[in-house]
Image (cartoon, rainbow, N blue to C red; front, side):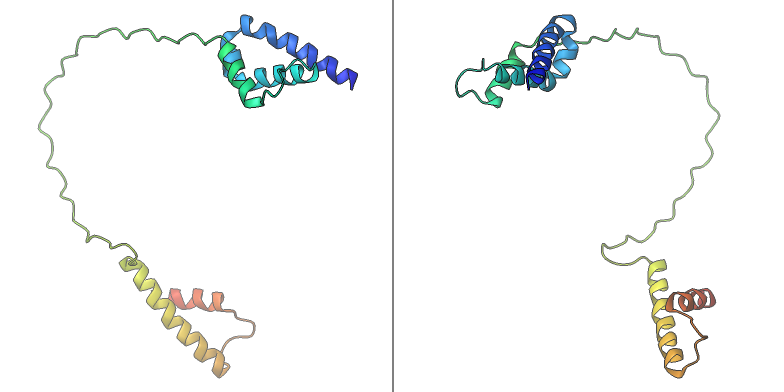
Length: 151
């Protein structure tokens, strides 16, 4: 336990120096910095009576240095380049309008696949009832062969 308290005290001392050495680092890691300070103060019993973590965090964040604003250099203004004359463009392609798809409705390809699936299902049930299926053939195997046949 004493070793743990010593580690926290050392960590708090190190973190106290972070605020001046690297303000951007301290601001980016306010939770880590303030958390270590809070634990050290809690262990050393130096927290004000009844102060919660949220209250401590708000005070700690306010005391951390603000990161310097990052400025980007202004882009130089470049004179617009003169484009050479371009030959006439070829005629634009004419897009064929597709019928709008209503939400919840299958596309024509999906509808065709569903119809094949229903037909193959009916054939599978009939062949199974008549005992015409090859030994061990399952529905997925039957469906694959039937779908290829019907396309």
